[in-house]
Image 1 (spheres, rainbow, N blue to C red):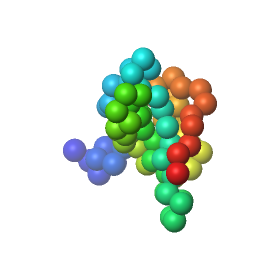
Image 2 (image 1 turned 90 degrees about the vertical axis):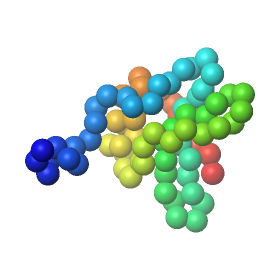
Image 3 (image 1 turned 90 degrees about the horizontal axis):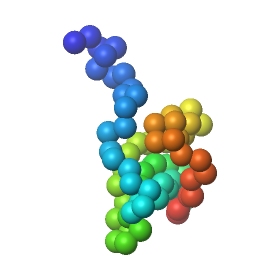
Image 4 (image 1 turned 60 degrees about the vertical axis):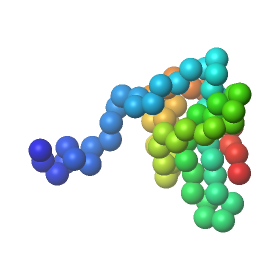
Amino acid sequence: MSIKNLFAKRKQPLISYNPETQYPIIRSSICTGEQVAGFKCKETGRFTEVMLIRNDKDLSSFRDMYNLGEIKKEY
């Protein structure tokens, strides 16, 4: 396995998303500004992290992976 393949971004969703029981959300730290995209369970409020959002390209990639529109932000 080459180094290039080791750090390549994956194109396929790794985490399953069920819009009936979950909704997409971006968690953002007030202190550091770090942003993490994932899904929150409607019943329990449990957050499932999918990927770190460093720039608009990462956010676009997250939206494309799961075919999402607008995503709420939570602090």
